[in-house]
Amino acid sequence: MAVPVSDTLVFFGATGDLAYKQIFPSLYGLIREGFDLPVIGVSLDGSIERLRERAGESLEHHGLTDKGASEKLMELLRAVRGDYGDPATFERLRKEMGEAKRPLHYLAIHPTMFARVVEGLAGSGCVENARVVLEKPFGRDLASARELNDILHDHFPEEAIFRIDHYLGKEPVQNILYTRFANPVFEPIWNHHYVRSIQITMAEEFGVEGRGKFYEEAGAIRDVLQNHMLQILAALTMDPPVGGDHEAVRDEKGRLFKAIRPLTPADVVRGQFDGYLSEPGVRSGSTVETFATVKLAIENWRWAGVPIFIRCGKKLPLTVTEILVEYKRPPRETFGEIVPVASSHVRIRISPDITMSMGLRLKKPGERMAGQDVELTFVRQAADDMPAYQRLLGDAMHGSSELFARQDSIEAQWRVVDAVLGNVTPLYSYRPGSWGPEEAYQLIGKHGPWHNPRPPEGKP
Ligand code: BG6
Image 1 (tube, helix red, strand yellow):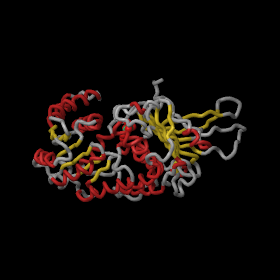
Image 2 (cartoon, helix red, strand yellow):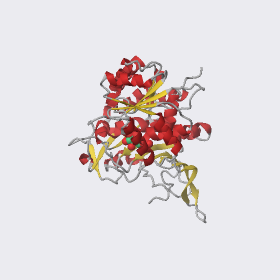
Image 3 (cartoon, protein in one colour):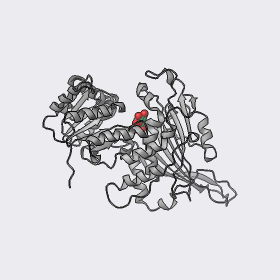
Image 4 (tube, helix red, strand yellow):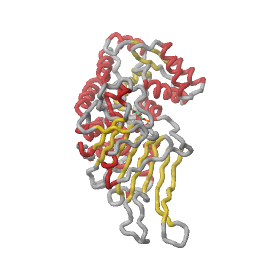
């Protein structure tokens, strides 16, 4: 049976950061593909003039210059103003929705307000045949994720709930899955027999950029590790999906998340960059981490004994997300040469540029049997052609949930980090522009060294 397309997009948080950074540019992209539906922006103080101004600024900031598309966006935009705790706001929304029969409500707001908005929507009759999109983090821990889910399920069936993790909408993340399962060469060597370790680094050169208040509620583990990083890990390590059912990929991911051993304090190093405490919105003496490194283990046959390290942080030397799957060294030195660790590897760069490469050790030309490390790159792309949010928003409007996180996975992801949330592990300071605190090197120890990604080509 064909799934009906939503007929109106309602987005909460219309004057906020996410709308500015992601939603307006995504709408512009969708309009260029033919999107032509009412878009209602709800916010505390956004008049229609303010909303149009904000949309215009966002498009300009992102260098989106197609006049036809931006005029169309202005024409489609409508505004509803009001407090999310006030039932009158939702009455006004109901009225503005007019004849809409299948709205999509996008909650681009602080997660602490999700429940209030859902109740407001339900109280005003805005949930009938509706879909709802929620931004991550979904909950603050396992217990609150379950509570939030119960509230949602009171008003929306599971197939109408779209939990965003925009990393799932990224082209290179999808390409990991595609490449693994479209080529039989990878599967036989994608396991503990051949893989020595896996490293994932998500480095950001910038700090919290005015989002101090949001970040204080999150910290690196809740902000990116529990979601984006674990999703990358799942794409990299899950088993092949079984059958052609549209839930097949999410089923396998769910199984993988459940196989990850929950973290204990000994598996975690947290850091905070010097200067974080002077950021606007940050509490004095805050112990929120802006950097985290964890050591993970996947307790299934494929990955038993393979150490997995994830490192993410703000104010690191550059902005880059990169994966390194290191193969084991040869079982003996055949040519009297010690083959370096990590000569043999797969390196996948998710951003800012996209590359997929394989590292090998080959003989250096000459008389001696001595080698050199070489890399064969099979994918090289400047950046993602379609922004993740555009892809996801389009999918949600069409009711396609494959690229959204399912509740069982979200719960399993929280289970991985639950015991190390908050202040249970020490916090080490680090210098902005460094690769985090020294203790991160101790955590990787004999499984290292850390592989520090290089700047994109052409950058110093
Ligand atoms: C967001 C986090 O989910 O992802 C931010 O809240 C982070 O702190 C961002 O900067 C990174 O996304 P991307 O797509 O730029 O890698």
